[in-house]
Image (cartoon, rainbow, N blue to C red; front, side, top):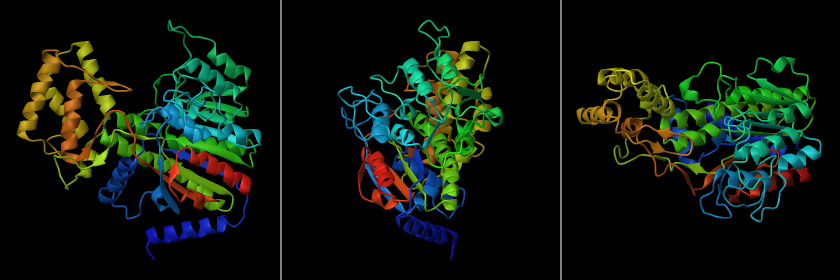
Length: 463
């Protein structure tokens, strides 16, 4: 019996045994932000054809696989606030609104309901903990950009553990520090920067953030290998250990792979694939827990929406993808664009030969990726336009503005890998739903995103 088949058989056996009237005590809710079918299949194809893994991605081995719609109350294409609200509360709302229905009435998340019933609650994200998806589980605001108010709600919610990059509401409109952090102190929340201080924390409540020197809207991309930053698996493990340390015999954890979405907005295939695989590493922590508690655990994996219209194949490659070239990409598109922007700011003398060396070292161009003479000449001309003549025009997306030269460089990379894009924003496509454990079979039919939290609560109340 091969590993793939034996894993699937074990999962099915555990799923069947866990549905025989056992009490659901442990709920893991994994949300791949922006993780549509293209993102999943891109990571799956890379995992199989490049890494040589015969087993599918872990979530694809779960006993239940279905899909969900994601439209909001105001558009067939949702934003993250409306989608997060749907996944957290079971209510549709308008784009931009968080924890409220379309009539601006506050709605209750499953995290809050379970917390009031005695469950421990942990929220983990690779982006800001006051961002849309985590915020939907504790706040009620008409505008997702109300970071100060969202932060106050995080401080007051009572949850055991919240983790992410950094809070964004700690300064006023003039850039001066405000009183937000005092609310965490007043609510006995231990604010920890990095994981080093977690072992000495005695408070029941923890806010885990990146180090002070890394002040970003996300924790940093997996592909950039930034020393010292938090990672999604590290934060997930820390959350689970903290809930156990608090003596929680029932708990709910939401884990968001937010950087999948950020990479999708950038149309950066290499970053997206590596973020989905990082999301899988975090998922394995829950799966290992499930294997130890199969009759008491439910794991649900889904996405709030798809980002970028990512697909496998484009007009440059047809049916012949070469995802192996992603192994030579050592930097995200964001990091490369910021590198280009800093070069322009310093006004240092930087030649085309210098840039060719950087592209060879960090993207494998010419050495591994067979950039053609025509593409080389196009890039050289674009280099002159942006760095010599200073005529480049940035391409603005939701989380960054990309140097025009960087856009051309990553277009060349796509022409070899074969990954394709339709937008820098979200799309209205279906997203996957995977489940295993107690009551998982209830997710087997077609779903809307509002169904998922309702089904979770149905399972809690049925068992």
